[in-house]
Length: 599
Image: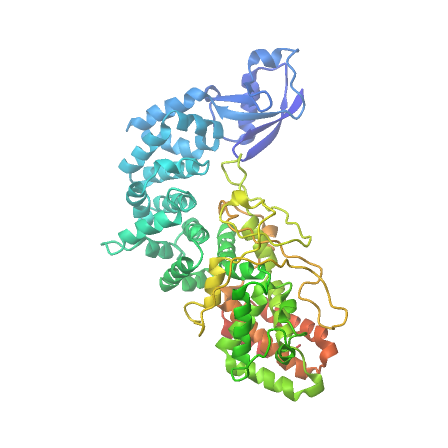
């Protein structure tokens, strides 16, 4: 007797193999462990190491070595795929065959290969075109499972997508609608269709008698069926991840917001219980932070004109009537920088630290000027406001778990050998290193020679959108040469924003699948969903402005001086954390919680 491993789909089972018994007895034992009513005649056991099938003769042959721990794949006989295809052609056997196909057969990657090789895809697509109701649901689910192994989408064009997938977004049959969302989500990642192809098809469908597909997606997010909500939000997340950055992404986000996605998500968050739905909501939250993560990973480079222009814009917003005499000048200290060249103060938070300062100065000029006026009155008790602003960016980065969001969002990857797309959390190197470029292709992520870059979505954020429109459009360059170095200034009581930790590089395009499988309770509990951050477009920036004003108030409450900065920062962090722990639903409610708390 030896113990072997038998795998089928996502299931791996340890089973005792008795050499003195027949193969049929062993197969019955396998089926009993897997608890699925299989038929012995339809399956074989393939030795993963030798790629050979286990037979009665080999089982009883003492010279045939089966080592303990050997792995066997339970797979369909190759002839089974041909039989299945023939049954799909017949209207009399099609219904039961489609049910078995999506329930068990397509969980076997060997069967999938045989099925495709034998022309099964063409027959399946024909079934989808002809069927309706629950049988159509099984057919679409089968297509979804085949799409997950890759290479299938080349057979699908925009006509098929429109007439056989998108049209079912408004189906009254929950199974059909859910499967249509799942198929479309995977097609959004395919080269031949992708975001552009799906969005173009949807645009052509608008204006017809039925509601546009995007409206159907938002409606599916209402609490009708949780599995439908999961599939609909997965489709939204897939489209957001696949959408090109910049203006196109901004317009797509505004389109979803106009249809009420933020309001619908707000309703979901009030009674969020399902683990799969929680995961999709968290992914949506992470996607809304992409431009923040991108800017944080783009080091300020004074050799890049766009970076310098943004810095000069900050000067002009703070001192509209005062001319800066020289780029390197003691005048910068009046704005709260520590030296004559502000470039050295942006380490750790990259261009994000400067972007937040500009946002505050441009959106709320009166409030910022009030901070400068109060600081001037403090005389010997003043603090460097701009450097404090960079520190507040870091505080929020920590409080909102954005380093974890970056790790989850850009390091989820699917196993190439597993069609079921398991969630794999890839460890991130936390040693200081030069930020990598933000790439579109996952295959290029391993390149260590790339220059740090800033996404077009981040550039769009710099230029503003929707509710916030800067007075001067600043284009942020895609190139930067400075790495994010970690160091501390021994002469200053103000800590650098990054105290020994290095945030993982943004790996753009690392989402190869947005999984629907259930995560563990522990894993979900480690990924916080902040209702407030989903309430409006610039929630991070608005929270930053509140943090700056909170710091200024606490500075006076503690009668702090320059050497007390780190203590003040810690107090502000605790106060903000207390308000966040109450999980406010909006920026306004966060202000209320903050005003009610005591430090």
